[in-house]
Image 1 (tube, rainbow, N blue to C red):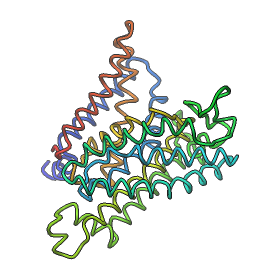
Image 2 (cartoon, helix red, strand yellow):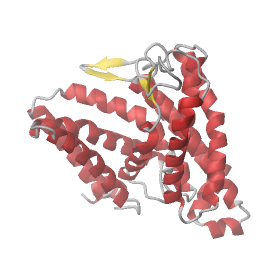
Image 3 (cartoon, helix red, strand yellow):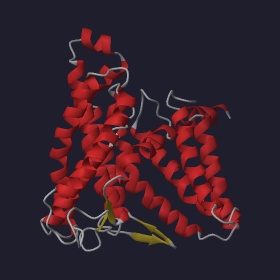
Length: 346
């Protein structure tokens, strides 16, 4: 028993075991309530893959000492611009997806650089300032979507100027990753390429974290004074981590959009950082420490709770608008719980 405790309980921590148990109870409840469990598992797997890269974007910021990147909407906006430019260039399929990613990376790198410079000027208040920086960019782009010179009829309002609120990817790269190499195990569909892309991004970030630059970045986050004494340029590595995080956010929203089937403009990216931050915290990360394992586990648990808890709540509380109230309670309850663990709850 001591060996089991050392191998399972200690690495995961009591909160993760409670959440895993709660998720298992929800699946059992869904079975007895005659809900389509296979459909729930399919949605669970897809949502884990489509949100995974956005959760991964939290890791560089946390390890470099700026904390969870609440300013990830800056990268999300850059990713949306990359996706819209691929539509403007009239590209389809894998070419459209790859061009969207390639265009978004330099945009996010530039945005991440100036965002990193801003965070260096507000050391100690990064999370609060990052939140408002993200809000500001999203609000600014509400004007930008009205005046940017896109000409594709797929994106423009039929009357007047500006881009539509929701832009479909149906003819472009809708589910290009979800459906590639997908196979069935019984009634459950495995979105192979979606997971391959997610785990490939995790591997690239792991390689970076174990490189010379990644180790220096972690030293900056763990002990800035020791890093300075060792000759490491603290501000430089904080900016690099912010750039990497912002670029991952840009790629993450393109992966999310191809799975969702739409780009959502204007205020849609406003609150997307909270879900990503909640996921990595539920996975066991803190505001100062995070690993790839926290990303994978957190994405699995957070999306699983959202996917399964809501249908179960809808069956148990079917009256009037209470199911919608339950949805909001479950979603923001999970986020609130995760934020209470920002200090590294065990």
